[in-house]
Length: 239
Image (cartoon, rainbow, N blue to C red):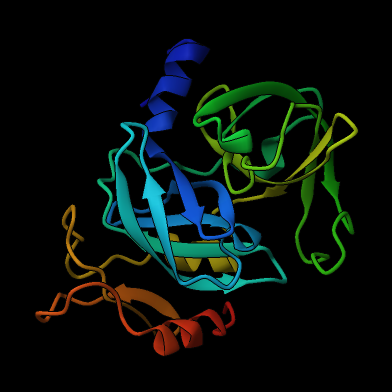
């Protein structure tokens, strides 16, 4: 709960849910949306990689496996065996107001767990990114750089308004994809629970069944499912 907390206290609490995602080609940000190890990030953060590393605020690295992604929304979901100490909740996107104070948390240029404050400059921008016309964006004036992508944009109460998606490097202009629990691709995953939570350090075996992400109990296997299966998972569209 963040009700009644100061902004520094809210940010300190929110950081428990934020992770750094490392791939062979770079790094970005993500955050827990389910207590069984499910993290949301941008598709362009993970690209076509299946296996990633997840680093927590404590500086510890864990395994992650991308299990669902869609370039048309730039959303991706991955499972990790990192400990989930907090999940973030989504605000009602219709309640956001122009000039509202917002905070972004991420890892710009690898400087981990950096906080930027700004305001909402405009609401429901569309056609900001070619190919992402199905996603509405919030325009921000917060200082954002490569590495912030996939990180949460929160209001002072601690609720998530969006996910940092892109910025113009030479301009103070940033866009966050609007996130809310009514979006089909988000709602389907937030409402799903695994039969068995992933234990910290437990080998990951993840699959998509009937359009929902599930984890399987280890069967003496070390690591994740095979790459061909995992790459097939990436091609499954959102319902």
